[in-house]
Image (tube, rainbow, N blue to C red):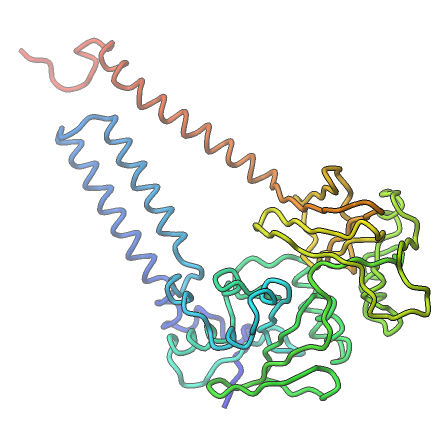
Length: 393
């Protein structure tokens, strides 16, 4: 029933219908905006209004162009297409769990350049299938943390993760997903029963929804650091059978030494080595506003707070107001040292390039406004013969 299209063999733009659907809306928008700009310029040349209003109208058209260009989540489908919750979202039963555990929509495949399509269906039907299988950006719209998506921006560590999942045997794949706080997986393939907790067959779509057993929460406290010298060694250590992810976190030795806040093994109030491996110090996400994540931690524990969000430049961490270093955890994620008495860890994102761009945009806007105000003044001060036109005889 399901066919496979290989991207290197059948690029999108060899499909005229796909290319037309991708660009038709944009071309129509551009044509309308160009026509409006030409109308404004024509009215100005006929003396209907002054230069100041001309600049204001052109700036308004530019603003409209930018706004309409960002209304779509993907080049081929408007936002309204995604606003209806997909079928698979109904299988994530609790609202609280939607923000704590991730949903992976891509199938496991040895060849990650392949994507699945229904042969013979129109482009709109294929887009509906993508929408129903929790594809592009639906997590942001429906409150589901997604492990992957179909947008055009791919972080390098996310690409690494997809590559590793395609290369590893099934048992290691599920271990990687557990480390990533993935509870639900949608796949077209069958797996051995002991690799997952439950499996649900869908009535309206092919494939299965798997629920993983005991995935790591999005935020948790690891009491022991496994120190390695290279980043890839952290990944290799984290997927071994000897690695207990609820107790341990793989860190770079150099980063941990530079942090200098905790010894290699630090625990307060934890059971002895022979204790319950399910023991987990308390850590709870109390607020997530996109660029700021607040996590409460128990003041009676020490270790490393692990957040299974991608490690990315621009994030900083403060523990009860004190800035702490963010360490690379398990190759993909973030860890912050916490000590007895600490109560809250706050991750804050601030992009320096974005801040610089905002300053440049603000300076440009101020310059334009000043220019709009100076044009009438300069025209009044210019001699009548130098303003253009033919002098009266």
